[in-house]
Length: 388
Image (tube, rainbow, N blue to C red; front, side, top):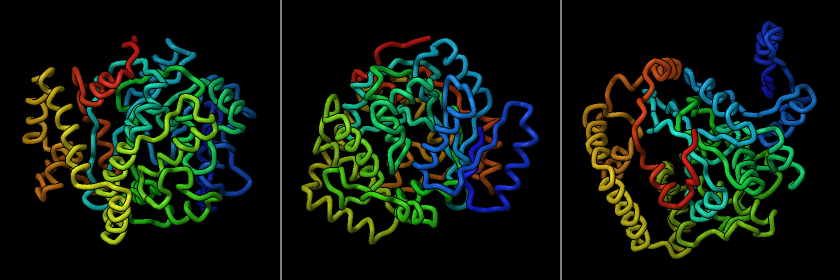
């Protein structure tokens, strides 16, 4: 089902004509009576899916995402084998907010894991949001799960960030989900992303419209509504669902984890004035250099333990940084924080997002036998079992 929420009459006409040509192949075109804010549109689309289809499973693919070659077939194999389970997955992204355009490919193992909802909720309370949450834009869910969420909460997606609101509500109604550790999509169009624009501290037109359409305070449920950060936006959804369930199974945000996650977000804000205001706010809340050092040391010790268990991972990481030289790697990010800008291999820089998408299709990052993010899930006790 293609839901056209465009505000441009010409674009609507082109899309409707394209879908009409595919109607014989099972494509249904729908359009809300008027353009809707994101959360309301997602809710309207869910009602349309129920009205016009007999779908057993639901996944949302936004207009800035494409499935990578072979990934949809792999996902459907998992869904066929586990029809009652929610299945989440990873994605790569094309950083096309500036030029040259850069392709950032995430590490992956290709393994399928069962993850405990309770542990994922606990991780979220500590500001560890990960790439495993079932946000429906990176998950396939049985329609029955959306119906269970709606029955418990009155609607499926809430009012502000429908992806994270659904994720936490989903964890509230399911004891476990499946997680396919594979990038199945590539995200692009970052210059049009309201979330990415807000994360950078450079509000684009879409972000300003998003804020203008909100009917509730954006961070009202969080411990500090004055923290205007990407992390606090996610905590808003976590805290809201926690209020909705009366706290059952959802611990309050961990004070240290809450400030640490917001500090990481503040460091990524590009606007100096905005970043300065948020740093002052963190300091007022008690975040000091000692806390920042404690956070960095904790991550370094966990990484050291991971590399001690998997020594070949270190050699692979060094090779990737010195030879492959991709954008977006952990080492590159750490070097940038101390003023070193590592050179990126020219083949991973492009003139347009379409060139980057074509390269991603033809040159996917190879699977690895293990990955840091899986080690973090295992260490936290989130992995119930490795599934087939």
